[in-house]
Length: 101
Length: 319
Image (cartoon, rainbow over all chains, first blue to last red; front, side, top):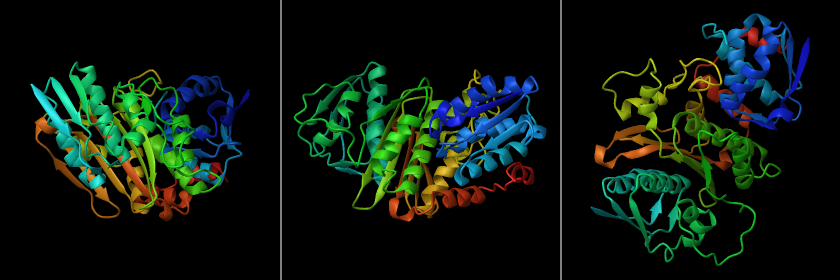
């Protein structure tokens, strides 16, 4: 089972609010991963982000699903700027003790 | 007991502590008279500090009286940004309201229930640096105002106020958030942060908040329904690093302590007497617009300066 999240349609062109990012991860993303599904984040139309959103959503995802990164957790159509936010958040998540959401 | 606050003529980052002292002097009074006679120019930090204080006093049942507010030089500006409206004073307007000015937006309100700060951040950035004119500054302001607002939304438990302004004379784009909430130290204490120790002061709390990877909520359970969101404690430090890169200013205050940094000079933290404390938290940042040429590079340098190294596994995901 694959699920494509079109981030711009969900959040708009700015992914800013870490509280929303955390809620999205917990309520929308984690249930798919826990059922063995694959999640694909599509960043078409997303122009900017905050580190708070990136950490709350993707940093924690990396922290709790490190083996799934690039396999059952994928990122597509991101700009160079968004790539840097994702890489930074995932790096932070991977350096933290594993957590189980 | 009565107190009269004579607001100063000008407030920039450097004389914010003086403003807070004047506001603090009225904390114990039951009747507070705020005299605007001399007010000519206030930065967003000063405006939100006064607004949050007035809101807090009003919520605590104090009687407030505004004096000379319609006669001061800044009257029309304060009216246009809805300052009087936000502090509960309905005044007739002798001008026609237009869409946002190119230099400022009306005061915005924040609360822990604010659904999404992104629309406010985008409105602030679009007003001060329209995307089609200066995309790099636009993105920086979207980022910076979002991070500043999130600190307020996630930690204060009180109402917050947000202001933004572009000052052409010195080329400063300023954003500021102030709330009348519990303050930084109480956030560490009430969240039972492992960083909190009995006997800590507001200064200790401010110093903790300025440390990379430290937040009062980093230890909390990672569910959206817990007391805090999964917070890695980088927002304030990123703001500081970006401010330094643009040779701007940063001012923070909470309780009996304040922090001020001018560009790349070392920041200073000072404490004030308890009777002059600020009942909440202020975060005000100024960026020199002309120094912002590449937002992505500024972010990369800020992250590197905070010790972040991109993990090999993280790099492979995007290969």
